[in-house]
Length: 211
Image (cartoon, rainbow, N blue to C red):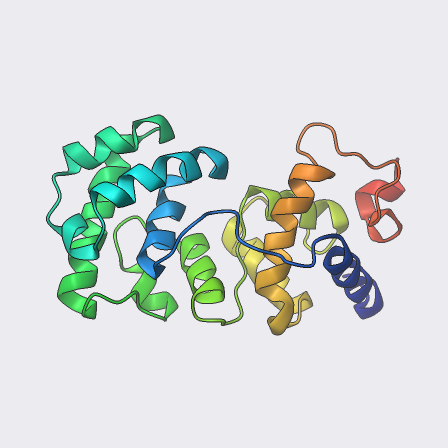
């Protein structure tokens, strides 16, 4: 287990590197973030951001999504991959938001994960970015880097990683920390070739110390 001092150094260093800690998915409405995260599965955020402007222009309201033909939605999101399943989930999700939640994105883990296509990663992101709640978004970057750092035991199981991070990260830091993991994973601690030489977190990184 990392010492509290080491955890604090990691958090503060990441704050210096990425002071804004913003989600890279672009959205104006709460449900648009929900749909964008669904589109991001097995797809880059960059690609999703290229696709969503035309999608949201064609379907400008939640009501229009709820009434949409999934086949037409699929045409707009084709380049995101797995478009048939994603389109079905988006339309079904819009329908449930209208029918069960008064057209609003709900603010609990239980309600969010009951929506079509919404898992814990998506729900955590919504809870953190939309509702300002403690959130532990365990995507591939977060799972990989926290394992290398030694904040977790190296497990690839998102739920196990989430539980371990809840034990070591202060709740108020959790959401922004996970956003910074994504940015750090793209810039420095990449999947195939992490740039350990000169890495600002190396002194507190279990993997970096061995290189």
